[in-house]
Length: 177
Image 1 (cartoon, helix red, strand yellow):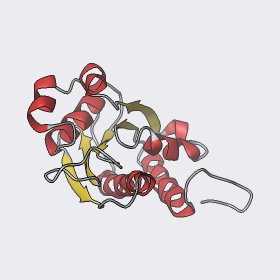
Image 2 (cartoon, rainbow, N blue to C red; image 1 turned 90 degrees about the vertical axis):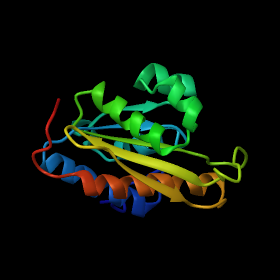
Image 3 (spheres, rainbow, N blue to C red; image 1 turned 60 degrees about the vertical axis):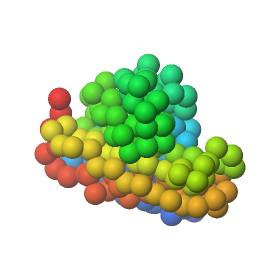
Image 4 (cartoon, rainbow, N blue to C red; image 1 turned 30 degrees about the vertical axis):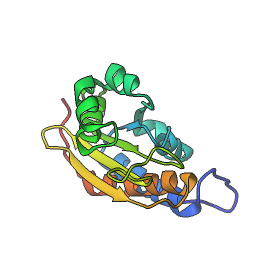
């Protein structure tokens, strides 16, 4: 946990939540990878803010562009065209692609509209999809509608939701491909 002698870039509650998650990962000897779009690496940045995280954090992908999602994670370009980069389908494919390309046991993806522009009536600013993937299971997807609470708050809220989703996925004996 955050001591009075440490400083962090993140709010103390987020840092503490990351610390607890990483302790769970370490206890179960699990590796994690991230695939981020709207958070731009904030999630993996939070995880690596915790000393000793290198034993649990395998890597992080920042796939802000559609081309990066396709090239680095194998998200089909036609899927992005059909459903949009901010969709349940793309979040799922991002997590699966990250898991497939690493020795990690768990992958989390985040894609959304942080604003202040880019929203539409169907996909408003503050819409975020997260997906967590583990080997041998269907990815779990979570839709968040934070509203237009500001770019910074949408991004931090997305990281907070990702940590919560990850906590539900960590369990002993997760298989590795």
